[in-house]
Length: 485
Length: 131
Image (cartoon, rainbow over all chains, first blue to last red; front, side):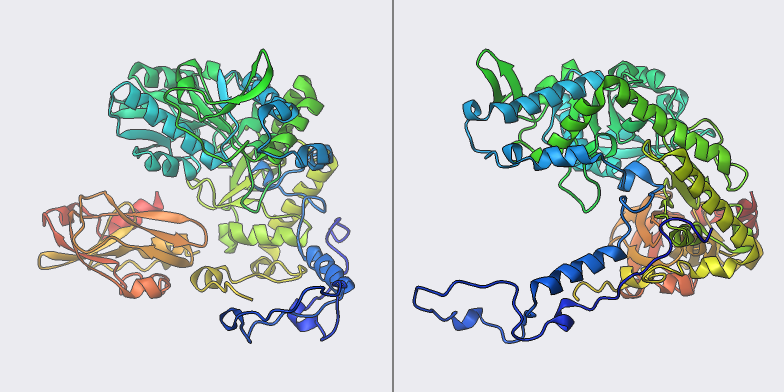
């Protein structure tokens, strides 16, 4: 494995800028002042704050060197895929940076802003076509805000009907944001246990669903990467008691162009544009989590939205029961441009193919690692597969050790310890963009590490060994975080 | 992680299937987490405790533990009202990893002394872990 790409090379040391500066260095010339100098008021001055004097080249080298310490999707594979980092075609970045879009002022009146609004309108139409839903709002600034919007729509729907519903069903495989979003809207989350195969059974939902329950929040495929095959029966049960079905679209990248979400019985859903439609990951934003719904919930969507009328395109307030505005102006517009560019550049057939490749790649990893790692739920997976550290425990090696050792082989660690129902979970999502050669490289690395767990477990406990920094003390970082340099 | 035969399971206390323990003292009970629970969680970095005066039924969630792996809920092994919380854990959550029995989490006034009899003794708890 010594010649594994991305594992050898020079990593430059680099001090803090404060340690690097020298008095008198300067990165630019400031024109001579043509107004009288005025001293800063005394209360604005602090002697202990010092800024280093640096030349332009000092700064360029500083940040270039620091950037080498980072792991990036442009330098190596992230086997945790769409959750945290996934390759996005550069074309969509280029489109978002286009001055004609980036410089358009959000306060221009609609008549002078036709292109900007048309892009929103078209994107709304595309997302409706992809999901089968009747309406959409592009405002939510992230998946979690999309969920919150969806739960506010649930609350608005029952309020308009004069019903008081206090609970909501949430499977034990759900993302943690689901119960949080529901609780913010006054619904008490009630956990539904997954069955032995890792999916929900219609009976378990029927046993809990009643007329005090607003409905269910269901992620399909679920976080074990398994398709909820009883979704239609579950939706019938929920609808039968007057409830609604929320579809968490986090894993839409597995079923795009294949599953008509509306026909599975979902009433409201959100999409994470970063997971499925080529928008940036990480850093906490800006993001976009459009919320979509079926016909009967249209009056509750956030407002305003882009519409087409006789005069062209306009931003219009809609829905007497609208939950209101969730974001200033047009939402996180540059993120929406990327999704629009992705959908148009791919086209319907290729969007479907992206999902097919994502599923094929995950199943390939699953089948090639089945004999190597413990697979708690052994059935055909969708876009991701979940292993556990059960076979490694006899060597006193944990999921965390395997994850850290992968760094030494040039891979970012996968998602670990999630979903919570798998003890020592290792969740692997190769995504659609990795080619077979690169996936094979990853599989070989995992096999080698599992061999090391038996022959030299100490190596895994100490990993990573060749990275710029060795294993960090996560406990200390959480207990006593150092928040200033 | 510990093998089952490495776990410390004192036999003067009782355990719940959710990995909490209870030790009674008159009408009061001290509640904490088992060695198995702390071992599974790994390094605990934050303990979210209820307030004195809060009442819970057996099986209710009364707080949560945050470890470097995940956040896990704690469930009441007995019904009762919280009369004291272990303030030391706010500053030093690692005490739960060091000794999960010496370092109880809450003290409650029990609602029904018979609740205690339904809990597992050390032997039965160990058997439940073996399954």
